Amino acid sequence: MISHTPQKIRELYSKVNGGLIIIIILSFIVGWQLGHRDYNFQIKNYKPQFKVTNQSPASSTTDIDFKLFWETWDLVSQKYIDKTAIDPQKLYYGAIQGMVAALGDPYTVFLPPQAQKSTKEQLSGSFEGVGIQLGYNKEKRLVVIAPLKDTPADRAGVKAGDLIVKINDKEAFSLSLPEAVSQIRGPKGSTVNLSVLRENESKPKDITLTRDTIVVKSVEFENKNTDLSQKPDSPTVTKTTKSGKEVAYIRLSQFGERTRNEWDLAVSEGLSHAPQGVIVDVRNNPGGFLDGAVYIASEFLDRGVIVIQEDALGNKESQQVIREGKLLKLPVVILINKGSASASEILAGAIQDRKRGTLVGEQSFGKGTIQSSEDLPEGTGIHITTAKWLTPDGRWIHNKGLTPDVIVENTEDGKDIQLEKALEVLDK
Image 1 (cartoon, helix red, strand yellow):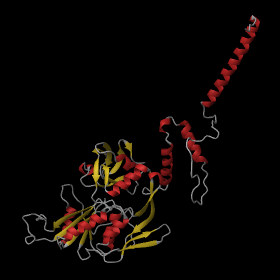
Image 2 (cartoon, helix red, strand yellow; image 1 turned 90 degrees about the vertical axis):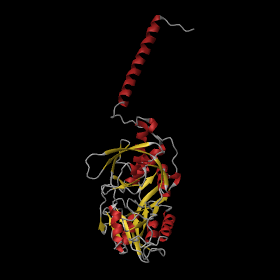
Image 3 (cartoon, helix red, strand yellow; image 1 turned 180 degrees about the vertical axis):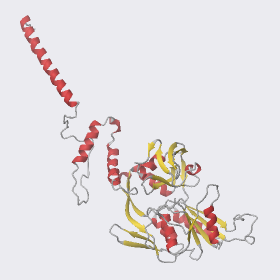
Image 4 (cartoon, helix red, strand yellow; image 1 turned 60 degrees about the vertical axis):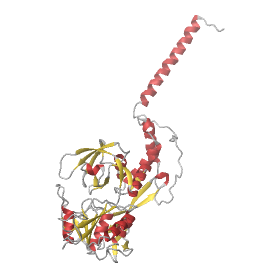
C-alpha cells in the first residue's frame, strides 16, 4: 500500500489540476479550429470505401488530372449531412451522366440500368407507364412529343407540344430524358402527378395519371372510303353502291422492333380491299429505328435516295431504296403534325422530296439528328448523336420541321379534319 503525507498530496493535486487545465485549453483550441473554415482540415491518403478498377482509359489523346474529381468525391463523402444518401454506385453513374450532359445535346445520354431497361421496353412494344413520348423543343425544354393512343395520358387529354413543368412536384427543367422517363414510369396501378403548360396558356395544369401496362402496336390498318357519307365495311353498303374510292389507312405509332412485320401484315390486309390510294398516318409518331423508316419508304419508292447521313467531318452517305415495294403505283398521302419526329420525318421528307405523295397536316417536330445506341457493362447503355440526317434534296429540318403541302390544323370538336382532307386529296 502506498501512502502520502498531506504535503505530498497537495503537491500531487496541484500538478494534476494544472495538467487538466492545460488539456482543457488545448481541447478548446482544437475544437474551435475544427469548427471554423480557416482551418484547413484534410485527411491524408483518404480513399472511398470501394475498389477502383480500369483506372486508365482504353484510348485517349487528352491528359486529364483527376485530382479535382477525387477531392470533390472526398469532400462529399466526408461532409454531406445525410450519409445514407451517399451511394458510390449512384455517384459513379451520376458522374458519367454529368460528363455526357456537358455536351449540351439532350439526345446524347448515358443510361443507368433502369433507364436502359425502360428504353428497350419502349421499342419492344410493352412497358408500364402512362403512354407519353418525351423529347425536347428548340429551347431544350422537356415536352410531350406525342401521347400514345388509348393510354392514360391520351385519355387524360395530354397533348403533343405540352411542356412538362413538374413531375411529382419535382422541377423537370434540369432532368435528362432518361431521368424524366424513369420518374413517369412505374408499376401498374400507381399514380404520377404532372404539371404541364400548354401552348398559348399562361398557367400550368396539374394532371394525375394512373399507370397501366402500355402495349404499343406500332401499325394499325383500317379500310376507308373517300365518300365520307359512307361508312367503310358497313354491312348495308356494298362495293357496287359506294361512290367514293377505297383507301388503305395505315396508322404508324412508332418505328420499333415489331414494326416491319406489323407493316407487312397491314399492307397485305390493305391490298385485299383493292384500294385506290393509301394514307400513312405518322401524327404523334416520335420516331424510332432509322432502318424502319428506310424499309417503309421503300414500299412507295422504286429507286433512289431516301435519306442522307452526314457525320462530323461532313462526309455524306446515302441510304437507298432497299427492296421492291408493293405500293409503288398507288397515290399516297402522309399525315403529319407537331408530334411527328425523327424517323417519321425521314419517311415524310423522302415522300415529299421525291414528289411521290402529298403531306397533309401541321408542321412536324424537327428532329434532324441520328443517335447510335450502344450497350455498356452492368446493364447500362448510351445514346450518342453520331450524325445529322438530310432529306433527299439535302434539307436539314432540325428545329424547323417539315412544312406540309396542304396545311390543316385539327380543331377540338372531335372531327379529324386532317384525315378528311387527306381523303379529299385522294379523291381528286
